[in-house]
Length: 147
Image 1 (tube, rainbow, N blue to C red):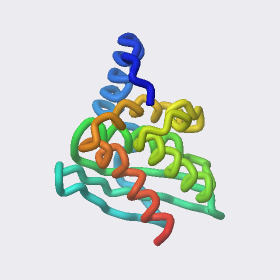
Image 2 (image 1 turned 45 degrees about the horizontal axis):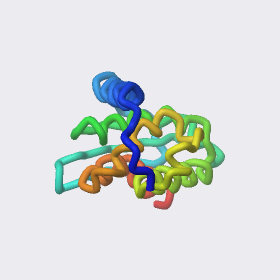
Image 3 (image 1 turned 60 degrees about the vertical axis):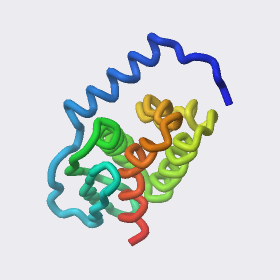
Image 4 (image 1 turned 135 degrees about the vertical axis):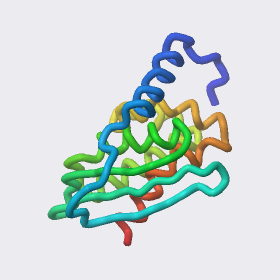
């Protein structure tokens, strides 16, 4: 495990990206004609997400969420919805696995460009109590696809 201090400029950039998604969430709202819906919450901290997908021929065409909670859960949901558009269901599940690996401290996952902006959340892995916050939207996605 890398114990070197993080680059302060990079940390500040990541923090700003997370706050931007929290303050101006992308794809927040109700999705008409959703084919998959799921609601999850984290009772320990009060985070909630209602995730809605419109899937055609195993491709995610649209994603929306309604959520309440901390900046990490809401930013993770916003970033996730941007990443999932036009992905196949197997691709979406693979991204969920990579996100989970990153939250468990997997350095390879933290550098995986397929996670896009979500890599800004890699530092959350150092705070075990916050990992569930970052994974809440991904757990909702997995539940929605598998149901």
